Length: 143
Image 1 (cartoon, rainbow, N blue to C red):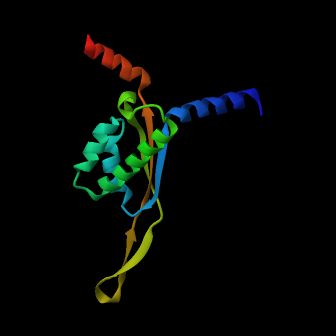
Image 2: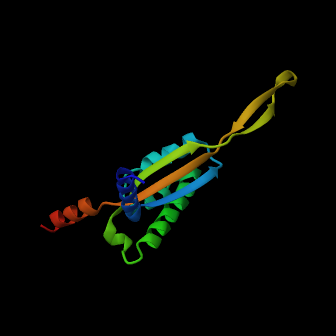
Image 3: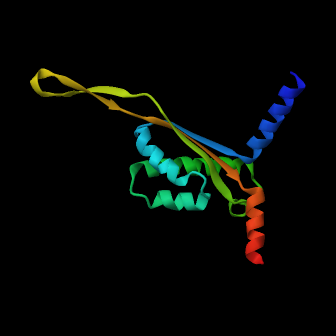
């Protein structure tokens, strides 16, 4: 392996030490509906995101909340000594990709059939810490 490739790999490993990833595949909700909820929590603090998803009336919010809780558990497994409240975790990335579609037929007039596409999606969530930003904000509040 060349030097440039090794340095890039080491940099990726350092970034992965502070981030936590969680995925949910083949979630039976249309990607469009799931993206509405994902856009609501992207870039927000974890506490805000959990509360927003808990009190939302949409069905997609419950599934997205489970992915967020899974990402939190993954972060705690990586950082056993750190407390979640002290680290100022935030949702770094959330993306929703379309998955397989179940194609069904619905009866239509005059003996025809219309195709119904039951869509599903894949959710990927990445949590990270605002180590530099969180500490400067707390020192400004104390002054």
